[in-house]
Every structure is written in structure tokens, then in C-alpha cells.
Length: 101
Length: 183
Image (cartoon, rainbow over all chains, first blue to last red; front, side, top):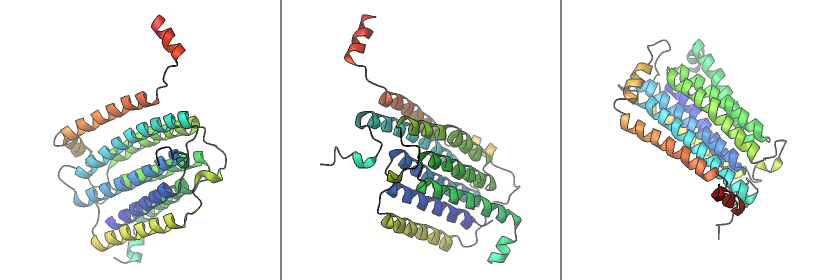
């Protein structure tokens, strides 16, 4: 297996995540798109690790760190979404213009 | 290596199948008109990603992905969807109206990333399936060379847990505060 085939899938997944991030209005769906992008990065790290075969599995270690940070990000993100929803009765980013000017 | 050589290896058929599952589910995540369908499509994308990790002989990370993401994070997302009372039926207002610019931008990003990796890594191969895997090595590495980052990450997770509870907690009303002080 070539390393390129995995990199191309990861690039496509990252581009899809970017598209979702730009297009979506609902905060929960924006967080879902961020998860897609983080996963694309994980595929890249694991593919490079499998290509290089480093002496201490650095790629896998860092992808575990990314998974952990992503879990923390989802927890905090959804708590903030919950708080915003309680105060503004909406989960739509277009409604969150209180601090714009 | 030509395309006919590439496709004649059975392992690449499996790769194509998994890759198509990942990309179709990823597409569903960003285009679905139903919030719950988007969250469930993410399950497909993540399961496919775990399959790719297995093909790259990274079993431990693959199962961590299944446990942490499919087991926990998706459930958290579904709770988030239910709590924010997002309309669970079809909803046309989930997306912005002008999608042309984001589409062009993301296609350009894909061409840039895929093109530069195709250009840089020509015919480098990943490890063959069936070679000894590196879970043992990963454990030694996590608790050896990367011990301090590992502890830092676990501390971040604890801080996020406490922060999440603090942010999401409802403030007491004055009457409730009075009742609490009376006890």
C-alpha cells in the first residue's frame, strides 16, 4: 500500500470538514465538522508513522494526544453551547452578534 | 506503480471500500438536512477511520477511536442536539445560503493538500499487513519518553471536566439560595 492513498483520503476529509465549518449555522454541527478535520489529521499521523516506523511510535502517541484533546474540546464546547442556548434561546451562530459592535 | 498494478492487490480493494465509506459519510455529515442524521453519519466516518488505522497496523489507536469517539463523543453530541432542542426533522436553515465560496475554497484546499503529498511521497510504501504491531512499543513510549506530555494531557482532561461542569451548571435563583442557606 502506498502512503499516498491514505494522505489523499485524509486531505479529502479535511476539505469536507472545512466546507462544513464554513457552511453550517448550527453550533453543534460546526463542532461535528471540527471532529472531521481532527480525524483527517489523525489519519495523516498514523500513515506517516506506518511509513517511517519510528523507534518510539511518535505518530501514534501524538494521535492519542489529539483524540484526548478533542474529547476535552467537545466537553467544553457543548457546555458553552448549553450556556448560550440557555441565555439566548438559540444555537444559531448568526444570532450571536451581541459582541460584534 | 501503475493503476492496474495498484488495483490488482486485494488489500487495495478493501482500502477503496473503506475510503468510499469514510468520504460518503463525511459528505453526509456536512450536507445532511437533519441534525441527528449528521451526527449518525459521523459514526460511519469514524468507524471507517478506525478501519484505516487497522490497515496501518495501529490497533490500539483504532480501538481507542472506537471507544472514545463512537462510544462517548457521539453520545455527547446527541445529548447536545437534544438539549438545544434543535429541530430534529428536516431543516433548511442549517446552512448558509451562499455555498459557492466555501465549496471553491475547500476544493482548492483539497487540491493543494493532495497535490503536495502526491508530489512529495511518490511511491513510498506503508508497513505491510501482518507485520508485528507496535502496541507494546506504544505503551513503553507513552509511559517513557512521553510521560510528561501524557501527564499534562491527563491534567488538561481533568481541567476540561471541571470546567465543563462549572460552565454548564445553572445558577441558583435568589429563593433557592435562601433555602440553601437556611439548611
